[in-house]
Length: 266
Image 1 (cartoon, helix red, strand yellow):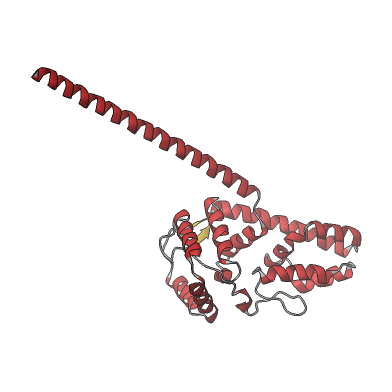
Image 2 (cartoon, rainbow, N blue to C red; image 1 turned 135 degrees about the vertical axis):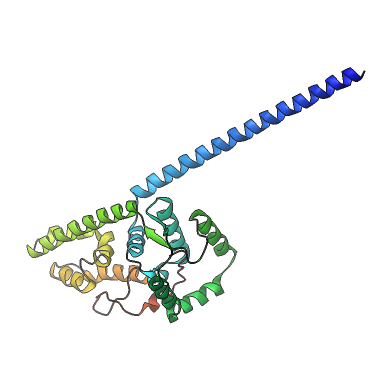
């Protein structure tokens, strides 16, 4: 009887151990399958995102390159989180792998002491809700943000994409200038219409300004007010520092960008 019980217990323990091993193996296989699916999904997302970067994506990437902290005031909060997360996931920006220098920290603190930033910060505190709180947590998790002082910089890949885009914008603008100089009105209008989405990049990347654009379009018999209105709408969404009555973009009052923007990790 004792031997039978001992054999039964031994057999039971062996069966339990085998079952545990099989369950662990199954869990590991399911986990590995999930990871492969997540990796494939991420690779597809990165491939699609890199092939379809928007004007806003390039605007933010260029701002990071220039260390333009006023990006805080130029984009809506959720939109800024989405774009930064996209750029980080695609490897176009990365966390700075060194501590900020004293000059950099001093510049950052001066920026935080500015009236615009304090106003922006107070507005965010008033507007904070569960939706934004959860989105910020997701953003910090996905971008590996551990501190408000974590800082981004453009990666080698990001610089490559910026250089290619800047060269494209430069070539487009040179072609438009050539058509303008030759007074080729029809072709100038056609090209400008094709590239109207890039108008803001012609300006922010330094190839022209709003006043010059207005003069050129006027001389080409175009409704420049319509195009400038489009740029003004983009300005109101936070693309540039300011636009005066003549349509000239300049470093004016940043109060127009107090639209609830956010600057996590930037």
